[in-house]
Length: 140
Image (cartoon, rainbow, N blue to C red; front, side):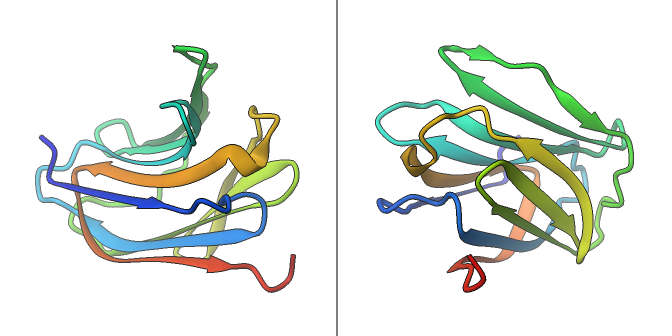
């Protein structure tokens, strides 16, 4: 069930140095949603953030060269169905960092060599989006 979809292109690149903040809440029958950072000129996913409510876990991965990489799982998932949340994702030269409601929950080592090729943000599946903010990190 695709409840909502959001997509934004940032031709100058999203990594490193940009913060993405998503505010919303899962739909009442939510199973999962995903936030993807995609590479330009391909459908490669540099970073796939996938909270899974039915499994109470966070899954991070990448989809490169037409195949999924090794999943990285975090079994601490503070998100609840029908509870509002804020996800903040930012990257430095080595990792994507994820905060849920202001608390760091995971980091994911970059698997893409050219970080400037990461130019698209996509949000899919069981989520009601309140707002999406993409901002340059002034501390980088």
